[in-house]
Amino acid sequence: MSFTNEGILQIALKQSAADANCNPEDFLRTENVIVESAKNAHARKYLTLPFDCSLISYGANIVASVNEKYRAVVADYMGRFPAYHCFETPNLHVLNDALQKEGLRICFMAEYFLPDLRVLKPLPCPCKLKLLHKEDFSALYTPQWSNALCEKRKELDVLGVGAYDGDALVGLAACSADCDGMWQIGIDVLPEYRKRGIASALTSRLALEILECGKVPFYCAAWSNIKSVRNAIKSGFRPAWVEMTAKPAAFVADMNGQLPIYN
Image 1 (cartoon, rainbow, N blue to C red):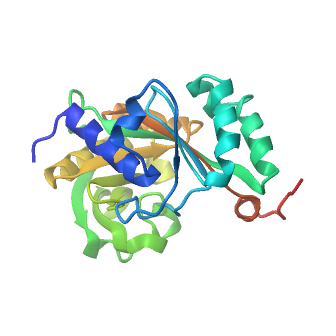
Image 2 (image 1 turned 90 degrees about the vertical axis):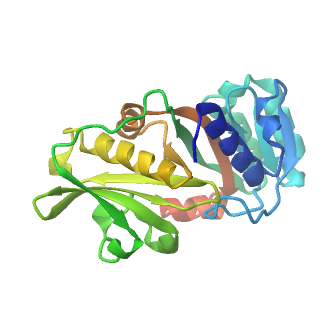
Image 3 (image 1 turned 180 degrees about the vertical axis):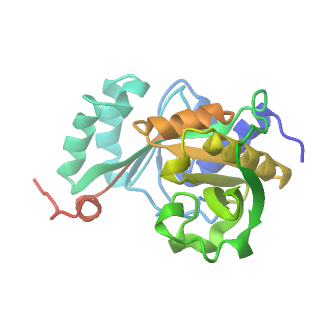
C-alpha cells in the first residue's frame, strides 16, 4: 500500500472520529465542536467508551466528546479561551474545578505523532537489529520492556524490532494493533545503552515495517517526556494531535495510590 502524508492524516482523522463519535472534518473546522460520546466498534481498543469528557485538537479547533450532562460545562470552558490554551495551565484549572464538582478530574494528557514521509528513513544503529513477531514476545513481558509491550493487552502486540549486543536484547520497539488502520509504537532501551541512537533506529525501522504492512504507525508521548518527544522527532515523526481526558475522581485517586478527593 502506498502512503502519502495527506493520506496518513486522513486515516488518523477518521480514527479520531471513530473514537470521539464525530465526523473527520470536525477536527478541521475553525469553530469548536461538541458531540455526545458513544461506543464504537472501530475505536481504539484501549479506550473506555463512552467518555465523560475528552478534548481532542489537531490544531485548528477542539472537538469535545462528552457525556451530555457535562456539555454546558465544557462549552463554557471552550468558549472562554483559545483552543491551545484549553490544554494547559492555568486555564485547565477552570475545567478541572468545574468537573471536580461533578466527581471528575483531568486525568490523561498526551501528544500524538504521525510519520512524516519526507524525513522518515532507516537510521543507523550500533547494534544488530532483528525483526520480531508475536511468537517472539512470550518471554519479553517483563518490566524493562513494559513500554514496548503491554501484558494486559498482549493479544494486540503484533510486530517489533529488537536491538542486540551479541545475543543480549538491549532495545525493543514494538507495536500494538490498537485499531483497524493504525498501530501504536512503544520503545524501551536498557539504561546502559541509551544515548547511542538505538531508540531512533528501532523506532524508524519499525515505522517503516508498519507502513509495509499497510498500516499507519503512530506514537504517543506526554508533553513533559522530553526524551520520548525527541525520539519521535529524530525518528521521523511530527506532532499531529493532542488529547485531554477526564476520569472519575476515584479512578484518578487509584492511579495515584490515594483516597479520592471530593468537594
